[in-house]
Length: 147
Image 1 (spheres, helix red, strand yellow):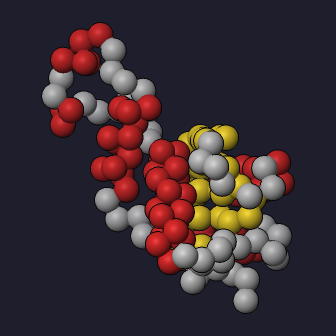
Image 2 (tube, rainbow, N blue to C red; image 1 turned 180 degrees about the vertical axis):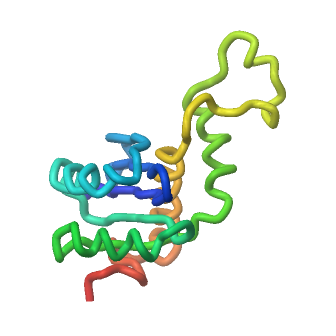
Image 3 (cartoon, helix red, strand yellow; image 1 turned 90 degrees about the horizontal axis):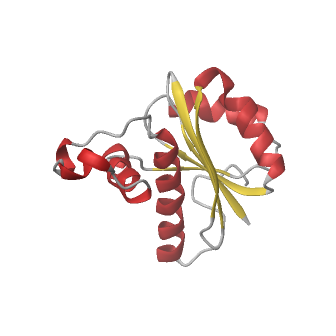
């Protein structure tokens, strides 16, 4: 079972794929106009069982597009993405520790050198997984499309 994380946005979107065992298989930031094509490709390539997306910026519009673009059997679940950008900034530095003089800057003054929407997508999958473990349920979430 693989999870597809999707952080929707107006200009760019974060995409990540993680296995059930926690292995990060893919992550990328894509332009919004290319997001649906990228999601469709990843959905097939990685045999996705759950699409986890954030519930904030433009989420309703994106969810409708996903429902129209992905197979009818796609299980699309929305999770709370509040504070995910702040959390992603910290995660970025864990994944890519600063080098050179950047190491000397206090953590709060460091800014990632690239967009971190893909890391937000990773965090959305993790939030979903934690919620599922806490609820003691299988893959289907409260807001999933399957009915």
